[in-house]
Structures are given as structure tokens and as C-alpha cells.
Image (cartoon, rainbow over all chains, first blue to last red; front, side, top):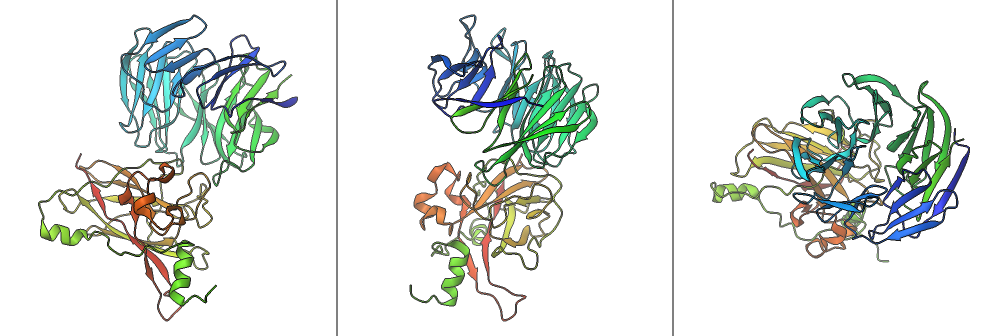
Length: 288
Length: 212
């Protein structure tokens, strides 16, 4: 269970956060496009860089802006063959592939960032992707659609591996376990689903969060799962953060957050989990 | 405050604002008779939203006895853009309760309807409430039919205080509605002599599908 809980005060209400690869910082995207970097140890902002409000933060040092993908660490950019739809996006862990959702065309587009070209247009459901996610090896991509269905494709071939169509609520959160053996999803129906990635059949369900689940994260050692709720009446109502022992499915801690708990993410060293509340802050949970 | 008559009271129950005065909803029936070959404009699309649940039961009565929400009857017809009957259409609709809360565990105020052999559907429910993140009353729709494009849309209420008594002017407010056409006039039925026939609001939402 978390051993500490604190907040980093930010100058804006961030819309996206990503831990840096050095484990020491967290990047936050402000609604006006500013990219702010905060030190985890002190909570102080160490750098700030302005980008247009349309920029999309894909990793702490990787963003999309106006037809270009920027790798800020390497200080280079890739021109995409066409602009991205303004909607959800996910970056493969090796940063080779990008998945984007276009609800109006009812497709997921895959981009090969080594060429800057779109590699596949995948027919998706009718509602648009509530969440896109890549497997740790980048070989599999998942769209959890607002129409309640989950579609799983092979990234390179675009082959549909499976369509899970027996859920009765959208999955707002989806992530693979670090070893890639399971896909974890959760959403409207308050339940955590664990899917075996050999054939994407249901392995088990974790029940007990007791609220619609907006986000989830699993620790790098796969021992701790965290789910963050939201209130279906308003995003301004208090919500629960539930900490699970992933192996046993047992709840080890329940915390309260004043507002929504979204964008849950673990630091690469597993020492921190962070989430956003819609306020001018980053919430941090510390793990010994 | 002057004492309200029965009708005025009922109107306030529906809207907490102004009842839309004009009952000038386009009469599609006369449009087909006048010009059967005239293409009808497909119903504008909206987003599906996060609260859709597959598997809603086939039911026309969504309002339970003692329900606190103000009764609402929704009727309409599903046609194609040539004003022809759409065979085997399915209308799914869902909305929040009068507090603005969706049922995410069950299927309260959720239904799957099969229009009759003339394309008509109807449902007895309650006026949806407001919720902070989307402060206009609305009903979500998903309409599917073989040979036609699936349509996701929403119906809004001209009586909604959100539109400040003037939906023609305020329909774009906060970017809530995609189209003025989706803001529907609300009729008031004052009720019959018995408790079994209570006062209710009524809207008619005719849906025009595009061929696939």
C-alpha cells in the first residue's frame, strides 16, 4: 500500500502527465499547451516550454504538434504524412508506432513513426476509442470503444486478433501488465477485467471499487494495481482511489480524492504513482 | 408572486423556465404527402458519450409507479431520406434520471425499441435532469437498421432553462448541441381525470437515416 500521499502544486490544471525516464521528474501538459517539468523530490518546477494548445503530449519528452512528432530528448522531429485527428492517441513503448482514434470515421489509424506514414486504417466501433493501448512489446494494439466493445489488432499487420463484444459498459481504462501476459480494463460497470493475452479471454474479474472507474495503473513489478474513480453525476464530486494486490485481487487500501482521479500512472521505478484531479495539482502516492 | 393556474404550474414542473410557445414542429407526414420524392435531410449526428450500455431491455414503459421524475412521452418515426419506411430498425435510447444521474449498474431509463410496421416508436419515461458536466437535458439515441448507416444522436428540450427561453438563439451555447434541429418543442398534456392518466410532457423525434 502507499506509504505517503502528497501533491505537487502546478500553475495550471494539467490535462496530461508522464514520468520522465530518469525517474526523477514528472512532465505535465497545461491546457494552454505549456509543458512543465517538476522534480519529484522537491515538487519544484525545473523547466517550462511553450507549445500550442493543440499539442498532444505522448510521453514526457515526446509530443505531437501540427503534423509533426517532436522527440525533445533527441531534439529532432518527424513530419507526418497528414495531420492527426484531434482525439485519443497512444504511443508504443518503443516509440515506433502511434495509434489515433477518429470517431467520425469510426476508425483507428496506426502510424509508423519511422516513416511518418500511416500504416493501417482499422475499422473500429461506432463511438470512438475511450482508450487506446499498446502491449509492452508494441506488437499488439487495443481500442476500448465507447460502444462497449474492445478490439485487439496486431500492430504490424493490422490483423484483428479478437473483438470482445460481450461487455455492457465502456472501458475507460486499459493497460497491459509489464510482462505482457494480461490486459487489464475497467470502466463504466465498476469492474476490473483481466484478460489473458494468449487468446484475450477473460481470466478474472476484480470487484469492489464501487464506482465507475476512469483510470488504472499497474506497478512495474505487477504487484500493485491502482484504480481511480469518477462520479457519474459530476466530475466535481469526491471519488475513491483503490489499491489492489494484483495477484490475489484483494483491496489493500482505499483513499479518497476530492475530485476525479484520471491519468493514473506509475513511475518506471515503481516508487510513485501519480494522477490528476482536475485541479491545479499533480497528486502523488509514494510506495516504499 | 401571482397564483399560477394549473397549466402554468405544470409548465413550470417541466421546465423551471419557459415553455416553448410555438408548436410549429415540422410535420413530416405532410412533407411526404406533398413531395414524396423530396429528399429529407438526415438527422444530425452527435457523440455516443460515456454512458451507453449494450443490452438494454425491450420495453416501452421506463417510468415506474411513484417515480419522482415528471412524466415524459417520447414518440417518433424512423424513415430514410426518401421518406420511406426503414425495415427492421432498432432504436436504443438512454437518459439520466431527474437528478441527472445515469444508471450504470442496471437499465433504468434505458430501452431498445423496435418501431412498428409504420415506423413509429414510443416510450413513456421521465424528463431527464441536468448534470454539471453537461447541463442541458437530453436523451441519447442509437439507431441501427440493415442497409443504413448507424446513427448516434441526441434529443434536447426547447423548454430547458439552459436555452433561456430562446433555443433558436441559444442552441449553440457552450457547444452542447450539434444542431438546432435536435432541440425539440415540448408539448404539455394536462392529464385526464384519473391518477392513471397523469399530466406529462411530450416530444416527437422523427429520425431520418441515411442509406449505407
